[in-house]
Length: 329
Ligand code: CP3
Image (cartoon, rainbow, N blue to C red; front, side, top):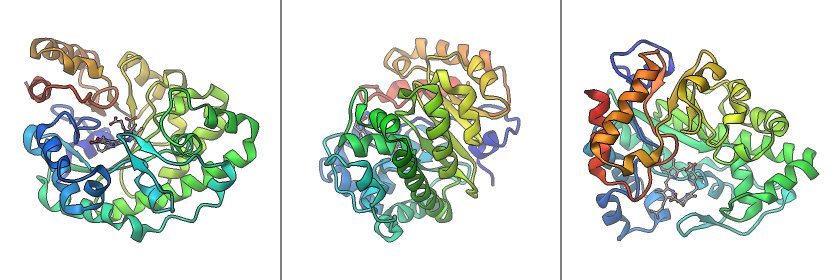
């Protein structure tokens, strides 16, 4: 039995687009908040029984076409000896470029819980639901490593990419190699699809995006035995270059009209691009926004319904039901 998400990524014509939601396993769900009362974020991620349960919560509630594994883009760095806490975003000591270069290779045994979570989810989801693995893209991981956590403008990463280009390129190559290993582990464990999150790549100029972000993202995904999605929100200026990453599909945020983005990306699948704010409105508004988006796409093969970025934690679950029903109506 094939999964409609996989079929869409292969550009097969489908009666309706597959749907899943970035950050679907999370705080807007009361059953997630309830479980998190008993387990810290890291404990939940590293305990396959709990991580699998959280992954399945939105599938049970909404019957989505993809089950994205509960973990974080920073999780594999813990398998490279990087220590961090989550409160709620990742917090770590700031690394220098040299320290990033000297990090040990990923020890997949130390993140074997992710593979185990994937195996568990695989035995429990309906056969038509795709299991989605993921990793952070090198530029985005480097941004957190050099900054020591979240930031609005990640100047440490932007300075490194301009001032110390050779070392930065080497650090990105290293992160790409390790993320390729990490994604390979996930595919081997049964992930049907993988997504690479490049949340902060849109902060860099076009030339740097082309010379550093694209090759690193491309190497992270090269030769995987599963269809791939690349997602760089806030990166409308880079759409033509993103196509060079070589993914099967691309996530598009809400700032660029979907068909304009599609024309600039080329013959690939496109995922998105409903503004997450729409899910904070009401069922009637949601239904009309979904209809408007589907009308623009007009059944073009390769469309995957999703938001333009992660679902907001204040989203009422009933609005997610309305979103899914509007697509299936
Ligand atoms: O449901 C899913 O999408 C799967 C799990 C998932 C999480 N994080 C769980 C999480 C995924 C795919 C991510 C990716 C991630 N993590 C990204 C890329 C996607 C994006 O939003 O652009 C980034 C940048 C991170 C780093 C990160 N982790 C931040 C900034 C935060 C805190 C802010 C926030 O949005 O919650 C986290 C913590 C985190 N990761 C939570 C969850 C459910 C919240 C933890 C909690 O329960 O308090």
